[in-house]
Length: 397
Image (cartoon, rainbow, N blue to C red):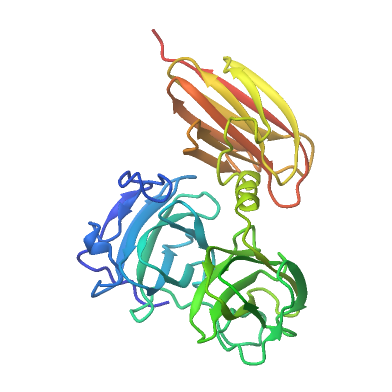
């Protein structure tokens, strides 16, 4: 891994997540990676911009940056010691455009893409919600990288996608799925006859797939690793111009295992439903998504729910400032519950997987009077009942 060099204009030690620029990236908050908006324009920066952040528990650190002209960008995060950072990249409206866990090599995260002018956010958190100190670097692809990156050559037990699309196999109709190992097919070609937004997925946890989209000139449009568990996903809501494209596929674990690749036309309604199902966004309380109303939070309550990988949603009201303890406890063997808490405006307040009690989850939050939304689901292949427990405490009078 390359030596960690801190630019004097961009050194910052911060607790995740600082609050600034609340109107960007769907209100994600964060701070400019160069200190100011002007200094965070990666298109014109003389050097990469870098910050060192202390990420505590299940919180996240959010860095903001800008692009003033179409620019080939590299975003990286490298943890100190055993830190394992996960990054998610959002556009100015809060739409996710990339995510990665291990493409930097050795547990580091890395993604490269071409971005159009605008403001962007990078959300960095610990893969296992453990306290972590990590460096985040955002720069152009012609500037010094922070990480080594995974190997881009074929062979061996693992490989990342390459931009060499010569000999790519025609994919066929959009909306279909093709399955092949990286050893058999490392590139799929397709053509857009008109400007079209697309979604690309690559699935097989055992292979740990990673994917990238390239245009006819081998420019990287987007790439992803570990969007959903170890599976990968790229969403391009802004229409790509008509033309020829290529999907590069890699497997970080085993290149001999089949990977199911799907290329489909971007569907905004389906994407929104998927966000709700994963718990990455809170549903509206208008009846369009099933949300169980638990009423006013009592001093102690419990609710048993049978849940799988899709989030089950609950709402409740708090009538006065309170400290709330929420637990998701697996009923029976094999359960692995996950929790998330939002306010009624859809702002994420906290999430947790694997709290202090094995695979069970726990959130503690200080809440003002208002309406709140809880999401609970099972992780991985776990299924079955989860006991949702809430305990409310109020300040002594």
